[in-house]
Length: 385
Ligand code: NZQ
Ligand code: ZN
Image (cartoon, rainbow, N blue to C red; front, top):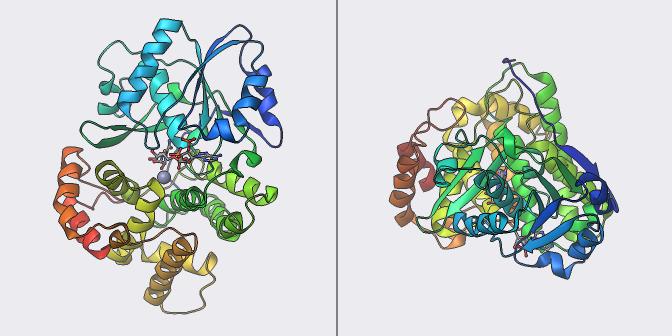
């Protein structure tokens, strides 16, 4: 097991009716900006619950944050914050709204060009407005981590940054808030949380038994509950298990003392930036292709995954690894998330453009061993057609 620091100060407030606790979590007299997306929170009753719990503060709202949030939109929110002396941000939504709010929180306190925040992957951030979250979509883990992903629409650059300054002070997780999700977003969310675990687990053995078994418990839970969320959207326990799995999948715990891959995410990010695919869709395409390409290097962990999570009974390691990849692809397809570029109308013509973006973003040493170059990514994308 490698050395590690583990730090996670976000308070999680989980369960039915917990939106009401906003009255205790946001300081009295605060000037709050409620940030949200395209308006789902105004149709499913979440906005009313939030505002009912904000009688002790002054609040105003900023809606219209896109899925895969735009840098340009965030800058408009920063102007509002400065004009209205906002001192607390409340993100109500999924990963896009929370990520945008993290960026807004940092940009509101940043003196230079706000793109520096992204260009430095967050190291330029020296402070941020405090923020809290009301989560409406189980997927990204953004509610309990220091990461945000923002897209510059003008140049189609989708990039992440990390900063402890933007960790949410609290996140409210009421599983009932996910009942109204469209099936496509349920599928995307299940794939995203599942892939977060796999990025930190299917690498190479590091003697990290606790982390491996945490990962396996999350994977088994997501396999059991994911399809049920599509069949029984109002099943509280199904939603609760998926929500907590998604948060645990990317709050730093699984990454302790272990190698991480993240190649599916970083190549997938380019696919969203360039062609607008949903985040979950890009992962469902990339992960089986990367595993196929790197089967040799990942074989030991693929075998462990195949045996412990999918209960594959074969004895030949390469066969077990191959079957584990197949099962994973089938699982994504069962959730309604297609796993080939061609399923989304993309063909080999996109490959040079994706490779150019990887070079531009200096993502030239991907994977847990840093041995996936943009040229390897071209071969991987061929496998994903
Ligand atoms: O905008 P509204 O109207 O709210 O609709 C949203 C949006 O259209 C809808 N939705 C959300 N909650 C709903 C709902 N509709 C009905 N009922 C509800 N309760 O769902 C759509 C997608 O929302 P979005 O926030 O984009 O989805 P998700 O949570 O999957 O977030 C994706 C973004 O997070 C980034 C992705 O790259 C992408 O930009 N990620 C963030 C990470 C992080 N911060 O750690 C890690 C992830 O790997 C990921 O990269
Ligand atoms: Zn993800």
